[in-house]
Amino acid sequence: MKYPYTVKDLPYAYNALEPFLDEATLHFHHDKHLQTYVNNLNKVLEPYPEYQKWELSDLLINLDKLPNEIKTGVRNNGGGVFNHIMYFESLTNKKSKIPSEISAAFGGEENLLASLKKAALGQFGSGFAWLVQDAKKQYKIIALPNQDNPLSMGLKPLLPLDVWEHAYYLGYQNKRDAYLDNLLKIIDWNQVSQRAK
Ligand code: MN
Image (tube, protein in one colour):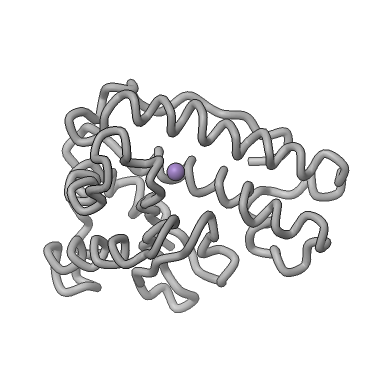
């Protein structure tokens, strides 16, 4: 994925994830919020032809090496683009089984889901909970604020759980807890495990 960034269609219909995630939320989240991150990232990179040639993941991995003038813009908007595309691609209306390799790392499916939910609930304000792999291929669960991405910390992102209010407020109002319970029912674990090394 490189400059100029564009918004691709969702890999499913806007109402495909109901009743777990409603159509209106997906329209706003994908058509408005993601589009804004895409527009802003393009604006940030417009005067920097050198960095237009970089893959988005390389920009996030090497955030510290970017010129100061674009570091925050790439962190927030590049993260916004990467995180949302991975989030939308991590959801499905098809039955999906958690790979035993992943659940075993957390002592079983129930513990894995509880740990993801705990990290997501514990993120104060906006951000994401993440299932990641570290350099030793160990599975870990972390929470990061805003649009920060695990790549910038040397971690491999496998699954983002968006807990910005825009991800759930239309359907769930302030009930982040109920949103997460339902979100965890529509994870495409096949996609998640394909991202693991
Ligand atoms: Mn979001």
